Image 1 (tube, rainbow, N blue to C red):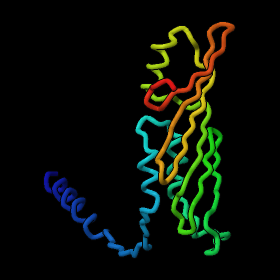
Image 2 (cartoon, helix red, strand yellow):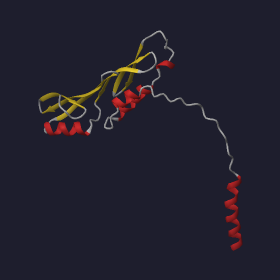
Image 3 (tube, one colour):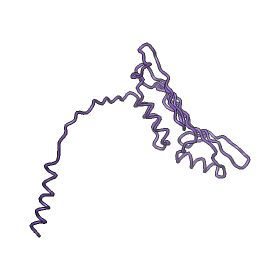
Image 4 (cartoon, helix red, strand yellow):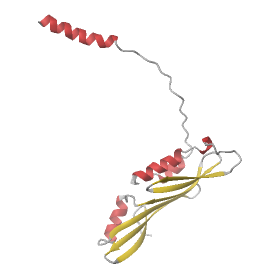
Length: 168
């Protein structure tokens, strides 16, 4: 019985070694373009909501030079990106580099520092709606702000804040 078990063990260990087929596949070429890294670095926010990050990465990776409507004659191209939570209108130059963007998102999750600053200053107020706006320009950088709609009983108020939690 002992020889039988050892024989099965040896057979079980050697059979998989003979059944492996090594396949060599050639992968397609990948082109990495760091063209819009300035836009991503400027708008990158670790506390931003997932839809905002997703759409900003889509805008940065969009290649206007590979589209059907691309022509070398034009100086810039305006492209709009939409999702249910918001939209981004981006202006690309003739080489596909982002010159400026206008972004607006509604009812997204607020960053922690904005939530705490809002709760500290208006403790009895309820957040009814919010709008997150970002404007990026290649020369001036990025400007981010929140417009918040608050309610306390019958009273309504609009508050404007920066993404750092400062009231504007």
